[in-house]
Image 1 (cartoon, rainbow, N blue to C red):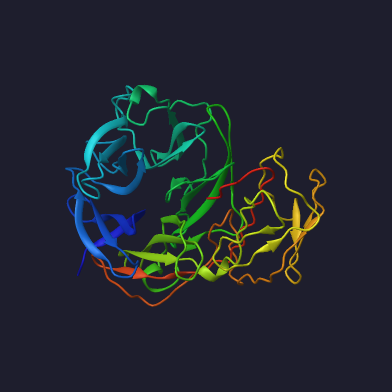
Image 2 (image 1 turned 45 degrees about the vertical axis):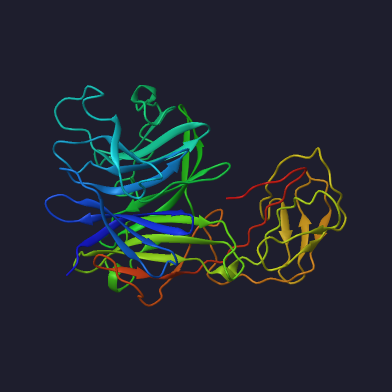
Length: 402
């Protein structure tokens, strides 16, 4: 029987898919990796990080020339805080070394019980580094700094803390997704036996103000049967910004699952590629044709509007700014702040019934496919069904969407 694996994080680069995960074992959990070039056949890359203390939650990302891993080290007696490991392109996915510790009990002068900083999630927002974490299993906290590798630039004593205090719902459960005007975070829901993950949008985030609300339609993941019969407690999503064989971009997501005997395993999901029928970047800047970049050749025709170079950069919001007929393809501006009357497209489209109802192409429903592959115990290849219609319009320029 193989060891359990949990807390998966994806990393995708140069056509190779990496899943970093916690290898659950005694006396201390370690960090392992698996690789694939097709998301179906996986190779176990073995242990990539092993310490004398417990490791989990291997949050991996790249910034400039370095690869970073910021794991959870909170479940320990001798080591707490936020430890930053780095490696280089010549060694990745191996070669991790401890670069710095951003915060621990000693650095803030705490005595007595060690400070636990569970499942730290790191991201950049408004040119600063932010970390959110669960503090001592009590609430969700935040810290901010200007240099990820220099503790002296960090402030964890913010007036906005705690940023969230809801018992059983205040521990991070995956990578943050940073949009133009908000940050989506995933938090564990352990209030019931069946573990879940819920998604939240942070709409205000600075050193003195914070606002966050749960995205309707949650939880984003929850247990069903078999390998997830006792729930899930982590999700990590990655947007593949390329043209795949079906002609559509897609989300790939990994989650962990716990079965009835509390054994953990990992599942991989992909979005339904046919769900995105059209993407119009509106970057032609002349003419009457707007070209579809989804790969489906659903070009549109501009009717009643002209190109301008002095307009405002704006992503339109459905219903509030525009309506789009599902039968005629008629696009109508409903916000009187804009001068366009209407835009008529020459195509028809459908959206699957499993609509992505979270936010900005987030995930709403999972549909299971048979297990195809195995990895260090169990890794299951699944399918994620979402229906997404991304409509991003730009006035006077080009808008890049996530």
